Image (cartoon, rainbow, N blue to C red):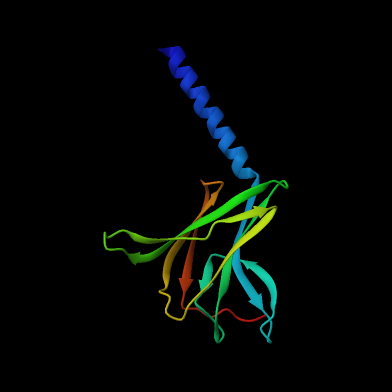
Length: 145
């Protein structure tokens, strides 16, 4: 019995270490695209507070995923929005799958009709959940820089 428990514990520790090593092969940067006065993108600002309206336009925001090596990977996402489905659960929207080498991005644009609230983005790499990002859409205005 003890040997079985020890083997199970070793397997769990090994699996956890392998999972951590796999996740550490990727970096995840989430935020908004900043624009200059003429609307050209000039910077990426890391934040989880996303304004629905940025000046007179909607906001471009999202995620940049970078691999530690040059291997190709599949990148996909599931977006959880604060709207209840017919079954009473939060609405989930599947993102488009992409084949990426080294660095890829998932960007979205807010809409004037978006509801303020708590949102989530689940990030799948090679069909495994690697990271979940919680962020807020808010009725705030992002000052241009």
